[in-house]
Length: 161
Ligand code: SF4
Ligand code: SF4
Image 1 (tube, rainbow, N blue to C red):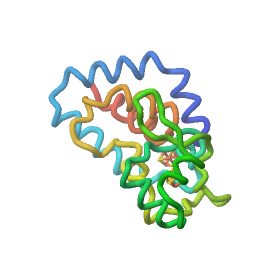
Image 2: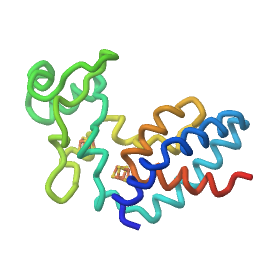
Image 3: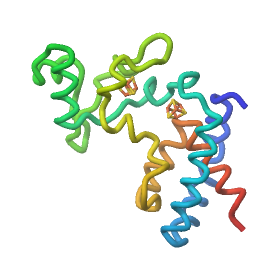
Image 4: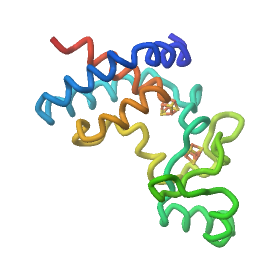
């Protein structure tokens, strides 16, 4: 299935996805983590992020102070100038991109600062972290952006009694 179709399907199943996440929230933390981690590994064996890049095209990460310093240094810029040029504060007072697609995404869907990318980019889509139940809202939102998350949830849904 095309990645776009996977996302379309997830968008048409918002209610069921919310119900699934609510159901998972009632299960033991370790059991839920193992569902996610197992499917994360399986799904990322099949999905090629270079053919997708939807996260970099449509959302972009939070930039920590360390991220800003590291990337600004790489660009021979002062952190303040980097912020001024590319970032803005969101409603939670976190630095995010002024606009998307991410300025560091190249035409072949490669990240031009891959080795020094923001920490959040390395952790996205957060489906292999511990305590998955703590980030249900984020997982729901990511399922609308990331076909891998949509697929992981679809596979978990099939496993549940
Ligand atoms: S949206 Fe998900 S599948 Fe697509 S590039 Fe990002 S992490 Fe990979
Ligand atoms: S910094 Fe790189 S990995 Fe992160 S959103 Fe931009 S292009 Fe994608």
